Length: 238
Image 1: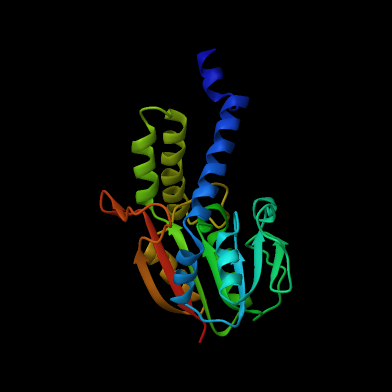
Image 2: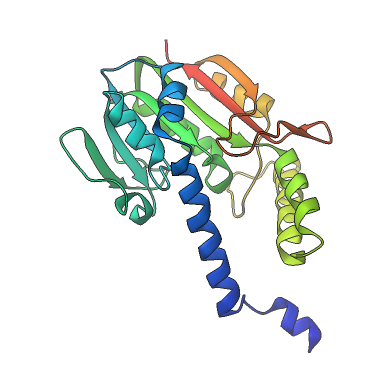
């Protein structure tokens, strides 16, 4: 009976807490301020131009890009969070799509953003689609979860949220098994490493401009037990 209880789906109050936690996280991401996101964008591209915010989440990057003078497409497979905050206009579109099957023409964007998305998609397929829709001379950039993120969160959550900590460790186990087994399809969340992402980008014919540890708007941690917590990539299509 005890085993069945542990394997049962989350109770309604647990689901409500998770939803509230995500809403708070989204609020904090927006509260980081438009200037922060515009400054980050200015490091990689200058307006005018067309921007794809892939996996836009609550839409703070898309809003900052529009405010900086870009024409923006905010895209997510669940666009409701962005739609609650963004208003479509001549310079801002909302689109619902999977990152591995984008409904956009080849070479249709000058800048592609992919922040905190790759753990939840088919990484290679998503990067290939980003490269496909990017114009010559265009840039793609994003932030990834490193293995240090999952270890750090597991340690933090273990004392009070055992299930959450186990889930973090499962990501690490699954990622290692996926790569050792050279599996082609992703069926669970997976972490990234700078070396692997850099190699995947170069295999698509793009030039890597940078692979830097850090980059999360809210979490300043760079490494945990020597492993990257987050890292940022930048690449250009010459």
